[in-house]
Amino acid sequence: MTLETPLGYWKRLGTAADEGHLFLDPAAARHCDTACSEYLCTLEKNKTDARALEKVEGFGTFDSGIALARKFSQKAVGGPNNLVDVLQSHIDVVTSMQAVFRKFFVAAEDIEQQNATSIGQNGPR
Image (cartoon, one colour):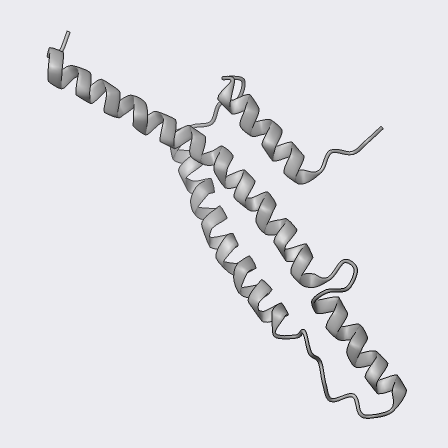
């Protein structure tokens, strides 16, 4: 059995929302969207801070100190499972989540606008 990735999961939920199989109150969706925006700001700041750790220094001139500095640098940027890439994967998932949440209140706003336009042109029924 293959485990679904978080990004794949949220993309699947987006498809379900598009097909009318997933429902969420527009007000709740707006709150979730706001939370996603705030979290994305935090993740982006942390990613910027992690990039500043690309060149770690201060472990001395011995081979062990140089190797340790390189190891820490690679954990921040460029190495396997480095912090910048991990944070970017979180950013991708939260962005996908936000896209799903926006489907609910953007759709509601579109319907309200269409109704208002129809009433304005045709009068109330």
